[in-house]
Length: 592
Image 1 (cartoon, helix red, strand yellow):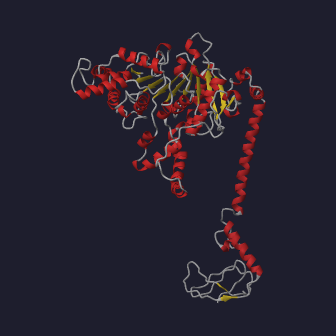
Image 2 (tube, rainbow, N blue to C red):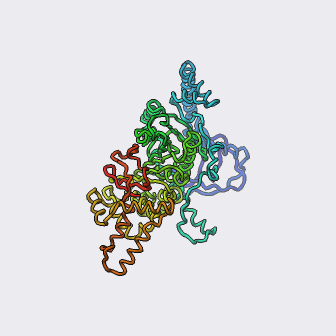
Image 3 (cartoon, rainbow, N blue to C red):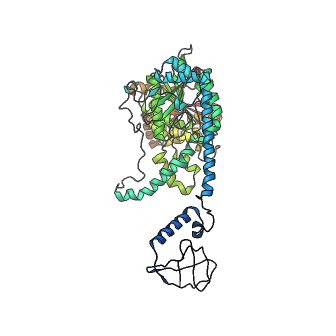
């Protein structure tokens, strides 16, 4: 029979022996509670008995015992005083921990006090605080000039331009809302499917997975410059480049507030006061996925004498937020508005210059501000999906496509086709980033697809099946000799091509798409049907070759011996050129 011998007492009777505990006095156990006792290290076969006379005090003592076991001990006997507590919250462990925490807090408080005293006794720091507070109250040019002499946390920099400023939206069509500017939305993967509640529930796991992938791994792979550790590693270089722009180029730093609340870090170099005429043009630079305006492509237009406005992607250096397509477009919108309404440049005097992934914001600006002067895309691509599929496993194809389309849709070609102005495309012949196979396979460069999609939209009659095939042959040429052989094979006549283009533009206007080449194609079809040579078309494919010459020739070929050359004598925007395609830094090939 079992007996209960007070709080902390453990007396078990049975066939396996007895384990003794600390007795505090025997008490009768009332009630009809059956206890089945088991002890470690003893044999089984304990008997079950009904115990009686369990008092209220005993129940309370037992509850306190168990609570002590949970908080501070490793067994009920230890909790009730049989052995010293060994739990995480035992008094013997809490007291030293509190001592350590108190010491650490005192050290941190001491460091903060010493830093405050050091700043207060430093006259230069007191002067900086005075200028910063004065700039927050009055953002005059003099206060901004004095504030630019200090390098400090950009979070404390006052906002220079707000997206809601009345003057910034006068010429905009509706303007952005707080949800962001308008983007081209991708078509649904399964068209014609009814959007019922059941279908939404079925899609929910895939949508959640795509969201998690995009906001964790995907965004950091696409924009490694937003990773904190990389920014910390590059910070000395960024500070040095920023100082060079301010001290040597008289750059003016500014903070822009986008419609989504992100603060965009910008740097403006004004060349309008110089004797060089290209200083009247503003080049807005859009950096790559790990580029910053401090050390990015802004140096190219600066060396050519242009006025330059550089900005950092959301989440890069001084800019806040994360670089998703919507945030990127919001940032680009406020940058263009800042250039027009605060810096005083007309859209016709603005050139958008982008490197690599910066082509997304550049093409968005070209689509949204069709009056800008020109667009230059260096080492850019047409669409992100093929490049994303290249670096991910084949089994992830569906997930990758869905994630890119829903959250990371960089549709450069689609946006560029909505721009009517001049375009300069620069393709790198050994680009390992935007090729889908190997860098040596020049036809896998997605810059080719960007060009072909633009040409097919602008010249649909010229870029028919045969025309598309010929242009692909020209893009595949790896030397000037191969290019020359293609020209001679298709009997390209430059003067005739230019006269046709000028005549069509004078008669129909500059808006694309052009139906130029339709007459030649009709002649070709009639000649092919008769299958007989004639003095006008001795070669059945000669008219087609001449038509393709409309795409392969144009007089305004810039000298791109420098990969990013924008000098006045090499301006890609002279004459009537509408597309200029540089196949490599060492040689230049031109398209209208």
